[in-house]
Length: 270
Image (tube, rainbow, N blue to C red; front, side, top):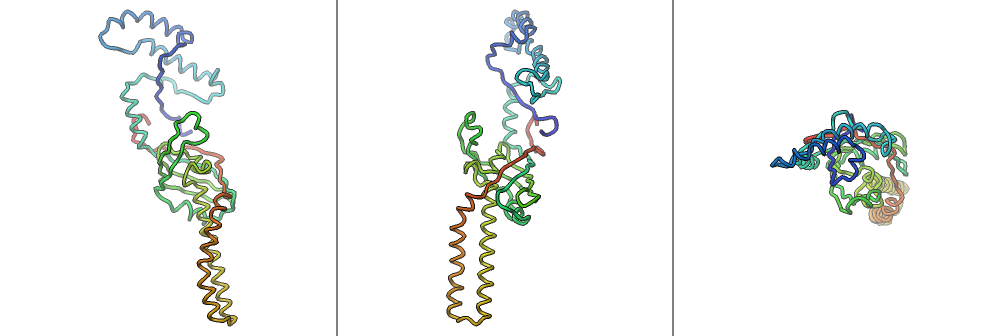
């Protein structure tokens, strides 16, 4: 969590049980009913303002639904706001970018230059994200276009690296790392697989060139060498193309830790 957390707006629609939980609020509502009914404009009930401190206290008690203390509200921070603030926060959310820091594992061994070539050089990468499988039961199935503005990988060992990335608001970072069975494309796994494929093709080309040079030195037939040299690029390209799909299927990444490092926004409440 970044700092003291994030602001939020909560709308309670047609509540049924507040009277039972907070009798004082119900009593205040009863006493104010006649006054409110005489006013020409709809105003928030005074009971609302008695209710909010009690709600804060209930949340911070770490009991019931919040027994583990996963949620904490700063004292006095709950307040009534106008509908216009809700609209402004929604508009500002589209302009946010967030910087995340995560620890990533990769099934294939990587060198520091692999990370720099495959991830570190990309800027404003366009990503297509389907609603992740882990939230599909509660989110609308959509394809969301997102942007990865920058990535800063740091090599730790052949199978581990840290990754700091800056992304547009609403990016599913976990799915961007492991690909979510192809539902996020391209993913970190895709980018690393493509980089390793290019490295393998380059190594094969270098080996072929070295073999050709050795054949020349041994006095091989010139025509035969030329024919072999002409076929080498096509052979390497075919091998790379044939090996691309298996490598993409075999290479897997997973995210072990994820934290929000920074939030950049023009939003109202952020």
